[in-house]
Image 1 (cartoon, rainbow, N blue to C red):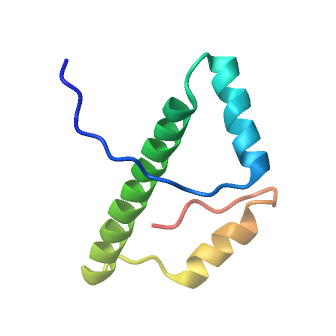
Image 2 (image 1 turned 30 degrees about the vertical axis):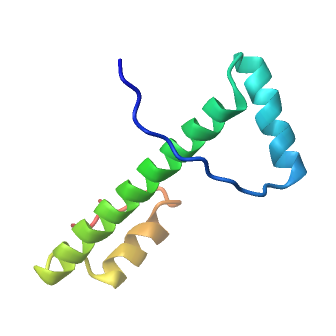
Length: 89
């Protein structure tokens, strides 16, 4: 399988973080490079999902699909009671 072109990135990280990366690399029998690529991939996916959810929420607002703030507060306040309210919708 052909590898995609790569680019070297440099970052200064706190020593305790670098030590944890080295420890994980040793435990997993992987390279430091592999650990960092996995972490960056997960972070990018998380940020892309956050962006998608934000755009979805803004579209809901634009279309008027809202839940009343007071209804949400009442529901949240009821959660630690003997008779919690149903989730507002």
